[in-house]
Amino acid sequence: MPYQTAYTQYQPKGFPGMSANMEEWNGITRTATATILFGCPAQRSGDNQCAPLASGGEFLGIAIAHHVITGSNGDSYAQYDNVPLADEGVYWALADAAITVGTALNFNTATNRYTTAAVSGTVIAVPGAEADTAAAGAGALFKLRLRRIPS
Image 1 (tube, rainbow, N blue to C red):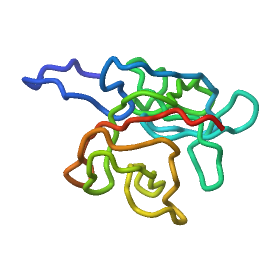
Image 2: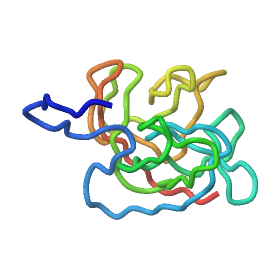
Image 3: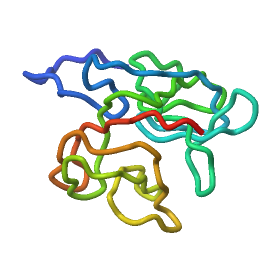
Image 4: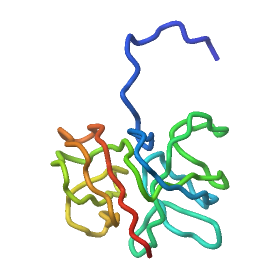
């Protein structure tokens, strides 16, 4: 692998799953039973395990990004990785379309992005998730606020 020789002038303001500020947050750790992308919601998948959120699943939190990943993919957790999940706090996320501040959010499993679209076959509700900042359109980085809702 060659050394990096070109650098951008500015670092990105954030990336999906990265904490967006120093507000209070809460997290738990579970073992992945399947690949989970940074910033994507996860559900309970057995004792002390988690999987990507699917229709009818019990929402546990979103996958907190980690700068050091042992797997080959630097933006996700692989099966059997320990996954830190946040169920409270403010995190960077990707929008599926334009989003207004304060809007309740759902997750589109087809695009792995957050949306305001109604719940359907591929769009799943994320309890307590709302837009903390606006998103200009598809692929835009925005701040997602999670408010803990006990199950």
